[in-house]
Structures are given as C-alpha cells and as structure tokens.
Length: 133
Length: 124
Length: 324
Ligand SMILES: Nc1ncnc2c1ncn2[C@@H]1O[C@H](COP(=O)(O)OP(=O)(O)O)[C@@H](O)[C@H]1O
Ligand SMILES: [Mg+2]
Image 1 (cartoon, rainbow over the protein chains, first blue to last red):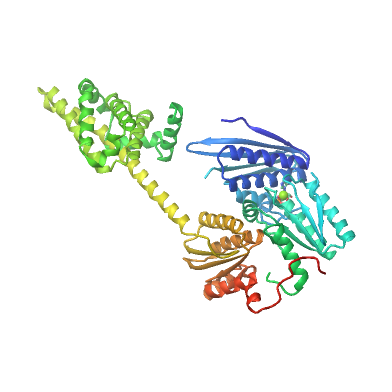
Image 2 (cartoon, rainbow over the protein chains, first blue to last red; image 1 turned 180 degrees about the horizontal axis):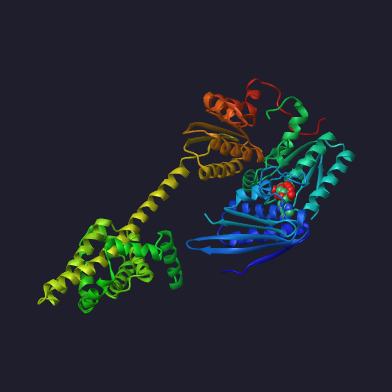
C-alpha cells in the first residue's frame, strides 16, 4: 500500500495542490477520468472550507485496498471553530458565508462515503471515500 | 498564473489557464471589469477549455463576472467546459444559471455575433 | 499472478461469498459434520493417501471423455493446476482441518472450474465417480468389518458434501456474474446517441432509469456533444418505463450538463399526465424545453440550428463580427 500524502492547507493556493494530488492518486489507482474529476472536485470544496472557515488545516490522502476493491480516502482536518449545526450545514444551499452552500452536501454526493465530525471550538474532520467502479 | 485577456474586435477573450487559483479568478474579475469600460466591449468570452475542475467558488465567481459585465453592457459566454467537468458540476449541484455557454471559442464568438445582430428573444 | 496476488484475490472471493468463520461452521452443521466424524476420517487417511493418484485419474478420466469439459482438459495450464489442486484436495480431505484455509483451497479449484466453463452436472458427475472410487477402496480395506468401513466412509462423505456445497455456490455465482455483465453490456448498448444531422443529436432513452444508468447516459451524451460539436440534442423519453421525481431529476441533470457544454436539449415524449404529476411533485419543468412528440422536437431542433431561416430565404447571419 502506498504511503499517505499530506497537504497542509493554509493559503488558497494549497487548495489547488490538494486537488491535484488527489487527482494524481485517483489516476494512479485506476479511477476513470470522470471519477478523478469528482475526487478533485470534492477535495476542492472541503479544502476551501478549511481556508474559509478554519484558516488552516490539513488534507490527507490515502490509497485504499480492501477485500476485492480499491479506492481512496480523503481526510480533511482542522482545528477551527467547528460547526454549530452540522445537520443544517449538510443541507443544500445553507451557508454562513453567503456562498452557494453546496460544498458539504455536494462533496457527499460525488463521493461514495462521507462522514462529518465536528465539535464547537475544537475543529472539524471530514472523511470521504470513493471506490473504483 | 494570471489569466491573459485578448481583444478581438469588440469582444474580450479571457483564456483561463490549467491551474486557476482563487486569486487568479478575483484578479480576472477586476481586470475584465476595467477593460470592458475602457474598450467599450460588447461581449466577454471566458474560455475554460484548459480547466479540469470547476468548483463552487469558481462557478460563483464566473457568475459574478457575467453579472458585472452585463451591468456594463457586455454579454458573457463561458466556453469550453469539458465533459468531465460538466458532469462534476451537475453532480455537485452547480448549473451556472443565467450565464450563456457555448461549446468552444468559435461557437462563443458566433453566439455573440448573433446576439448583437438579432437582439430579439432567444431560444433560452 | 504471483502467489500473494492469488492469495489476496482468494481472500476477496471469500469475503464476496460471505465465507466467514461462522458461515463455515454453519456449513459444517448443515452437512452434519461433527467432532465424532474426525476420528472415523482419520481411520481412512492412509487408504485415501495411498490411492490418491488413482482417484485423481478417475476424476480426470471421466472429464476427458466429455465434450463439455474440453476447455479444461485441453488447456495444459488449467489442467496441470487442476491436478495439483485436486491432489492437494485429496490429502486435505482426510486431514481433519476444515477451516478457512481448507475452504480457500476449495474456492480456488472451483474458480478454476468456472473459468474453464465447467457445467455443474459435469462436475457433479466427475465428483460422483471420484467418491465411488474412494468408497470402494475403503470398503476393501475394511473387508472384515464392513459396518465400520461404511461408517468411516459416511463421515468422509460429509466432507465431500461440504466441498460440493462450496463448489456449487461458486459455479452459480460465476454464472450470475456473467449474466450481470451481459446485462450491463446490453444496457450500455441500449442508449445510443445518434447523429441526426450536422450538430444535431438524438438520444432515445428506453427502459428503466436508475442512478447508475443515468450516469452512463449523461457521460456518453456529453462525450458525443463534444465529438460531434453538437448544438442541439433531442432527448426522447417516450420509452422510459416510469418517470417519477427521481428519474425526472436525473433527466434534469443530463439536460443541465449538456447546457454547460453549450448544447440545447429538447425533451420529447413526455406525456401530459407525467408532466402534470411532475409539476405537482415540484419538479421544475420550466428549466426544460419540452415538445410533445419526436417529430415536433426534431423540427424545433432544426429551427434552432437555423434551417428554417434558410428555407424561408431569410437573410443569413453576417459572416463576420465587424459590424455594430
Ligand atoms: N471546516 C469548517 N469549519 C467550520 N465551519 C465549516 C467548515 N466547513 C463548513 N463549515 C460551515 O458549513 C457551512 C456550509 O458549508 P458548504 O456546504 O461548504 O457551503 P459554503 O462554503 O458555500 O458556505 C459553511 O457556511 C460553514 O458555516
Ligand atoms: Mg464551502
């Protein structure tokens, strides 16, 4: 299994780096070009949230090999303010920044598995997986 | 990488590069806004052929550019959205509503030409 | 395949078939394999080991006489491996250990049969001959106490049934997989994107639309739009089995994605009942250009492309963009 890739997220240009690394990892693990795009898109949204709401954090990428299937996992972590109402944050169109509010729900749609863990004042972790089809 | 803006007749063409950061996009917004005024342009084409991802931030900014341009008298057409990119956008829930789109630069120019000529109601 | 690759793929097959330790224990209970059997199996260990070569020959001889088994017996790679595995099987059968490792070995042999396209009946026939040969050898060994020999054989037969259960499951699963793959291929073929004329595509959608299929349709349409430089797409949904809100949303996504690439989609074949029920469900049909029937849709598409303009002899749009 390949080693994990860590991309520190602090400036908005790190978002580009994170999604490029994600696309490369997806390509190396046999994802179709459409699915590579979906992975890059989800990473872009989640990494941007770190820059916008938590100032800094990290995106970790890892190739997955489970029984009979391959995939990748993306873990985005920050020690920012956390999300007061995670259920609401997962709704399409909900945004505290007057932006489109599709980042979290959209990332969930384009990935196969999605988990949002957040604690007020402590930070937020988003874990998402996608499998090669 | 800053986005180069070319001028062809009365159309401004922004050629977006493969790697587009938020700063580049914001810069483009300001540049275009300035140049529309100076050049009295009738149309703006944003060519995204080279882009492999259009996320919610980019979509929203492009929409902003189109609205601003409209207020200054220019129509905006986004051209060159690739199949994978379009697919990703709809999956995420993005639609670029209210912004014209065309297959490529040539089509975008043809569209602006027609719009300038007819000025009548269009199909969409 | 390297050894570890093979090992890994076997483990994933075990997982796919749900062959956990509990499941294996359950299978043993079903065939009635109990601790008491192990002693009786141990008693025939030597007979089986001694006759292993002969039993194996019986098995493959039976197969070599059948046309249906030709792919297996004529492919040297497969046959050699099958012999190797069968020999290991005969040895393992009387070892008294029927856990994960044993099941993995059964699985590997079964997959080999499946790859060779061995039919269930043919396999069962060969296995039957093998068992009969083993049974005769055991009875001969226990000539002086046939009851004991018979009981020992019955215990061994439980293991044989345990084995058959696994092999049959693999053969069935492989068959289902083949059928699924064929269905998949048919489904992909069933959504052709047709070029009607320059820059105009027709997408007739037929059958049941689920998320997966909607994705395939959208992907192939988007690629066709680029390949044909299409400007208008007529999407005919007359043949779609049911259009509920979920299906409508899928279709809406396809329309939106096409628009992002600069193509206009005209939807035809939406009956007024369906349209009304969708409106009632809150689906925004206003975002879709709909025309009642296919003919009307094609005419509308031509109008969009400017064909009527030509027919009516209207002025052509100016060739350059220098005016104004
Ligand atoms: N990492 C994070 N830390 C704190 N708040 C977050 C984080 N990510 C998302 N949020 C909150 O969730 C809301 C919804 O996020 P999202 O769906 O990406 O939409 P948007 O970014 O357009 O607001 C944000 O407006 C923000 O309040
Ligand atoms: Mg966001």
